Length: 70
Image (cartoon, rainbow, N blue to C red; front, side, top):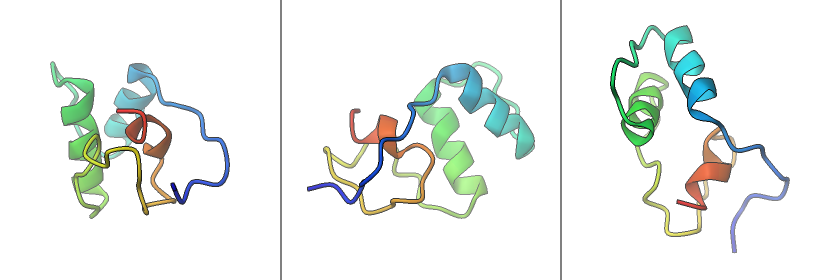
């Protein structure tokens, strides 16, 4: 069972790029997963997006809604 108890909005690529730019990351031609990993690293988090197999204990992560689906 997932720790996610509230519905979170999935982030579109444009949202992810905007977040990256806020952190000083130049998205360039990065794929969404690569960009999210770069954001997670910049925020001193484990770059784990897309590896959770439907369960994640990182309830504060803004990518959790997408990640548990990936």
